[in-house]
Length: 420
Ligand code: UD1
Image 1 (cartoon, rainbow, N blue to C red):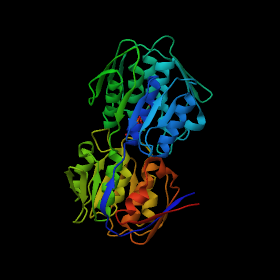
Image 2: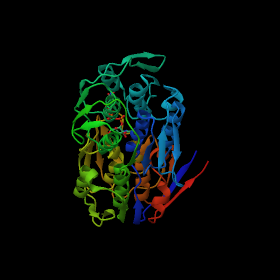
Image 3: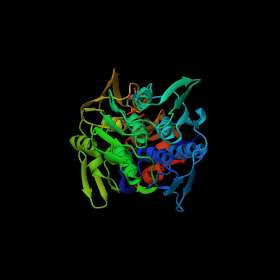
Image 4: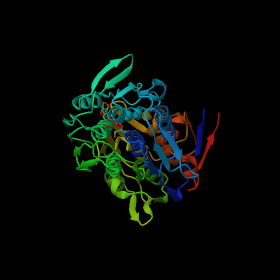
């Protein structure tokens, strides 16, 4: 199993190119199920999660063809020949559930394995299923599979989410675009990735109003056509490298980054002593002064993203003063805490909050990655620490960060991947 070795303490300087957003690319790929024509996606990141989604779509019968030498433009299209999403793929990536809505809408049936247990919380899919039932689907759970049927077409309905869910909003949006009549999604998630999906669906001929708000109104259409769409830059990758610059006291340009998608993160970083500015090429991040402890609470967009919580905690571990970090989205997303403490951090967890008492210096240690964002928080801590850190189980990292060690090494980090 690969490991990453870091010798910390070097300020980063230079440029990092931000790739397309993983969490936008995954639903957009699933949207390829909604048409037999070609959907061309540009700025696709090269990540394990993207390969998993491509495998899933391929076994449903779609062709996924790279249309450039680098494989960043994908053409997706074809007939649905198999409406089954097997456990073997579903267990690797929870976002595979995003094929459920499109399969039902286009093929009228789907048999999708329940996603496997996930380390950061129980993460049920009840909102997805209830919403699809409201659109007229018949759903039963059988042998670990969701068996869903939509005799005739799905029918538009008014769906009020009891709380905000990114995945449920995306699944229902993709189901509703081909339903008969009007659907209203109330208390919908407003993440930029949802806006990206809705824009692409409209380019395919869907009729979605209220894009960017928490009330989406969808006028169903009989069929969708192909389209060409460029995926937005990854705001979480951007925020992660901004924390890397900050933790090392460096100065880097994040090419293609869009500050407008990072408002809560950039506000919080600025409050803790990091300089951020928008440039024509992207975003510049630098830190010249000491970091100061800053409280933060994760919330649905436009609040502070849960996907940035672990990285911000690594930063706060080296701040002056204390920071209270409260996680409101997932109930078990502090698995990086004991690993950061192994590196000399002083963090206590009380229920949904972690109290981080900053220390002047972290020290390198062997640590274990437990999930995607926890892994990268350990890389950040390693960059800021003195001495050597080895991050084990980096396969989590490869699911969501492209060429992380090359990007950081190009900015002066002493980091390498050890195979085997
Ligand atoms: C997406 C992101 C993930 C991010 C999360 C929150 C993708 C591929 N993944 O995940 O990176 O951390 O949003 O911003 O975009 N819930 C239920 N029932 C449901 C659905 C969700 O109880 O049917 C709960 C979840 O357990 C969680 C909360 O709702 O506690 C929010 O989850 P949700 O927004 O659905 O996250 P994902 O779409 O899975």
